[in-house]
Length: 317
Image (cartoon, rainbow, N blue to C red; front, side, top):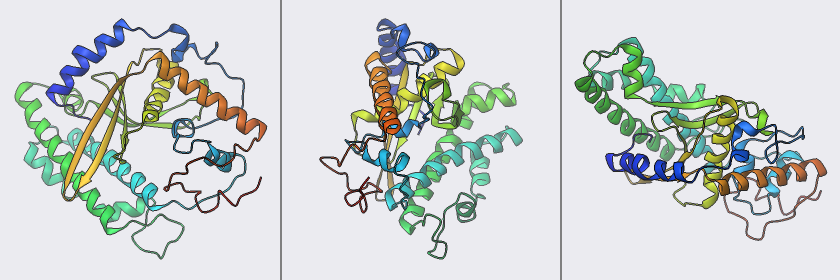
């Protein structure tokens, strides 16, 4: 999901990055300016990036029910699938690094044999999912979700195997650490402390593509929405607040399953002034709602996958 095609790489380096350098971000909107307006916040409310960036509910009443009314919900099928498939992608990259650090001289074919030993059904339990209805407190996986997971494992492991042979052919004297980085130049599920920006201390970004200095977010929802870019924007600003280096590029990776095929499309974007301002406006609006315990009311158009859809209309503050 994080390996760019030659055309994409050329577009990112020759077009998007060059444009970002010309259209420089206003200094006050860099994450390292967290102690000054407009980024600074004196609130004790701590939100996740998804609390701010997931604007599926136009009135943000889902966040109100979660944070103020403390109304619980059961994870629906779409949410379960998304969580599970995110975990699968993370696992294959982590597993690949473990295998290569143990023996970086493996060929691509030998690597695939090692990956084939991975027991998906055993991993499901350790990840907090269930394959049956016997454990109602755990999200249940369907056979269709498992088939998608197998496709993802095969898809990514095959691409990694190719990169192993390709990198070794070009860098035959490369040592272990450098070799693993060249094959897998991405950090998955990187943990970030967002407290400088009034966010959670335990954030996790889907992927940081080190070679491009680009934040990536996976979406198993084929419908593209403008507010998806707020997720990469939030993580980029947090990384700037922690490491004090500019993060100018974001990538939304849309993954769709078409029968037995995986379709991947990537939306690259400059993490611009407009996106940063939009993120901060949503953050401050939600903080005020939570601090004042203001019920924003029902959304004009509820989205069918909302986990609160069965209780939102009947809940009274």
